[in-house]
Amino acid sequence: MNALLITGTDTDAGKTVLTTALAAYWQTYCTAQTLGILKPIQTGDSGLGGVAESDRALYSRLFKLDPNEVTPLPFVAPLAPPIAAAQEGRRIELDKLWQAFEAMRQKYDWVLVEGLGGLGSPVTNETTVADLAWDWHVPAVLVVPVKLGAIGQAVANVALARQTRVHLKGIVLNCVQPCTEQEIANWAPADLIRSLTSIPVLGLMPHLPDPTNLSALAQIASDLDLESLLPLASLLSGIA
Image (cartoon, rainbow, N blue to C red; front, side, top):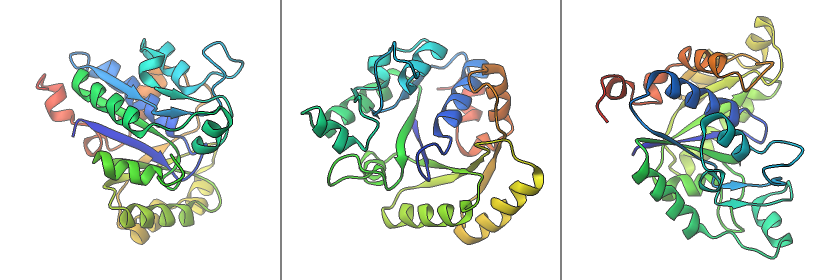
């Protein structure tokens, strides 16, 4: 599978930061290979000229991607997708999402898929992000924000991944706000999370004042255990 799902414990966990960091690293070091980014559903999207920049607008601007390809189903209301869709008199077309994913997999050497919310977040009235990951057979990385409660959130989401048979490649911790080393050790100790979940912790992303600084993002990605997330050996040797 030439794709990776970036999911999180909840909204604002840092999925976009990790997705952007991996894409920035790719753009810097894997120039011979192509990369696509898919954000299947975007809620709270007021359009490309909105006051707050949506994820699809961000990816389009930073990596010169077609925003309509990045997000096939945008919705205006910042709500769970089935609720946002109902308010617009629309429905979530799972077949359209699958077709967009398959088209990207055929077009690009590697595809980063940013999920919405957490693994348990609804895609439709009957389907969650975890269900989508299983249906698409795409492996995932779990972003856990460094804050009080991080340990329990990590354990709960890993349990959900196992229940729904999602293959988790690892966990990435993310400082959603500036954190001291002591705060990180108190709120999200990597050894304890690894012990409780039996899932490797692949690294820590520090808080970034400017989350659009591509050189800083590429450096953050390089400090992670990228061998567990990206096919670096084949990419860096020029083999697709």
